[in-house]
Length: 506
Ligand code: PHE
Image (tube, rainbow, N blue to C red; front, side, top):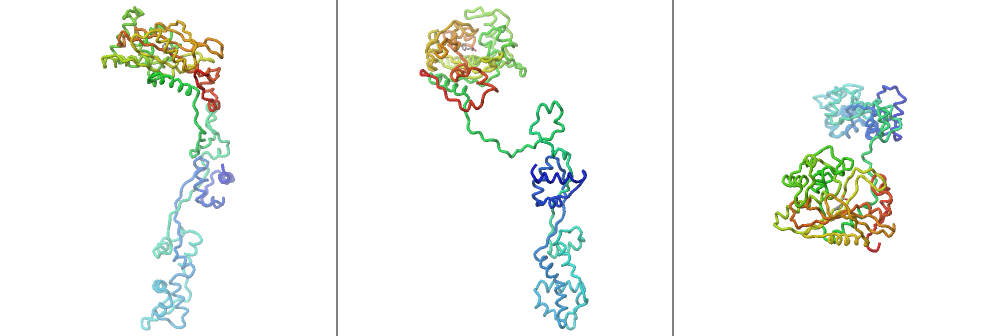
């Protein structure tokens, strides 16, 4: 509360609870101009329900220039009467007309005669007084009006006449009848700036006084924007891919059907990764439509009984399971959609065109969170689709890719993925840590994945993937992943972190 609000509240505190005060009186009491009082103090206090105000309209009457003149000098009829009275001999109309101004002479004579203050002798055309003492009512009324706009007390007739004679103007004015408002008692309470969970639990919110929002306040201007380390490192990976001629895949769908994330990749429906312990399932919408009916049937076939030289998994494949919506667990879901599209393209073109694709985006896993695991992280994925690619091509491309990150000492270890054969984990020797660290996973996509899509039999797809967080943590010397991502990140550190460049000389 500012000083004026404080004084207003004090005024009501010192009076009975049902006191009713006019805004004009109150403003005068507080020595604040009425308009200022209404526009600021009263408006703010009524907005918070500390006070209640009822608008009252009244007439205000003010004197015109002419009215002001007659208030001082007397009305025209009075001035005319006095002129007749003062003359040594009964004056003629003409003589008085020359003595007095036109306005006074004309209106004054007419009214003075009407009021029977003077009489005109028809024969001699001279004027004489009919009364000894007269009362200049018009001037008197004008004088009281000038003191106070007590127009309400004035008989309607009289006001009408003054208006007609253009001696006064009447305007409407608004004042307020003010009383205590429903939250008067809150005015002095400490005002809460926010609603807290404690207030909700204890029920204190019901009686708490809340600070009004200041919608006019401007937010603090951000000093500058800054990039998160993950964004900086992502950009460098992008540059590596772009320099190697890879196209970026559209990764904007975090929600994916199990079909594209698992089934299309020849990952069996009983696979433990497809359990709710490892994967986030959506409850709404719980299922997706998979519209590629013919392809879906080929996927069913390859899972159930194989084909293309494979025995399949020999189980009963369920479309219902495939339609379940999940948060994608890897960006390979995007790769499977892209390879399916590439097969459609090949059909349309009548021939296959080799492609190199990459993606860097977020994936989700139902992990137990610890210093190196989060439930969401970023994957970097690259793939090359071309006829007759071999494991040597995969090692060559990976070697070239990691060389650009500054990792030249690589080792490959046989591994297993449901969708690649062979599969290899990638290790790099870390000079700082003085040991071999796992840096990625790779493989050649299985025919059981590619052939049902409709890709030609000789087309091989080599692919590899790694996390974005791991190299970022190594480059920035971050030991705990929670210092990199999530609500515990130190914003100040984000502001000042450098651009770390990867390359041979780091
Ligand atoms: N999708 C694999 C993962 O999530 C990475 C990978 C990509 C493996 C491409 C082989 C080929 O770990």
